[in-house]
Image (tube, rainbow, N blue to C red; front, side):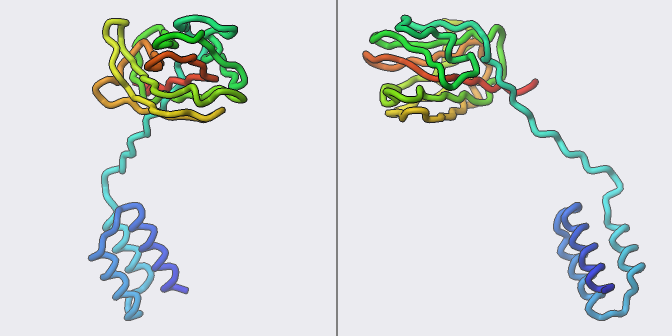
Length: 195
């Protein structure tokens, strides 16, 4: 029983302190010889615990920042641009048959963009989402490519795009299809890191 308890203590310490092979071998040897007492093993373990507290940096949490924000699109065909930020995956935006149709959201201020998620329209015509440029920027004359989606998409498909580190701060997010097409999506979610 003492050997099992000691082994569990050693394993626990190796998880907390990182794997220390020298200490592990020494204690394992001590346990195998049955010459040490449990208190001696505990003293050795306690001696090796770091004196400084271990600081764990919290993982950055991203918040969705596009919900309910101001939107626009190249044209309206039955459905409005605001449907993509209403939180309802059963509604969708819809442009007319435009050359380079676009949809855009104004986040109201600059955010550190972590990722952009697009939910394709359900029920119909998912393949229309293709050759899509996702651009972001702090102003309309300072838009940069975040990601490109070749497609074609599928009905109800959930797509996730991460921008590179050089173009992460943005107020505007724009989706543009290259060529002549309808642009419609169910929802666009923009996740930003809390600075």
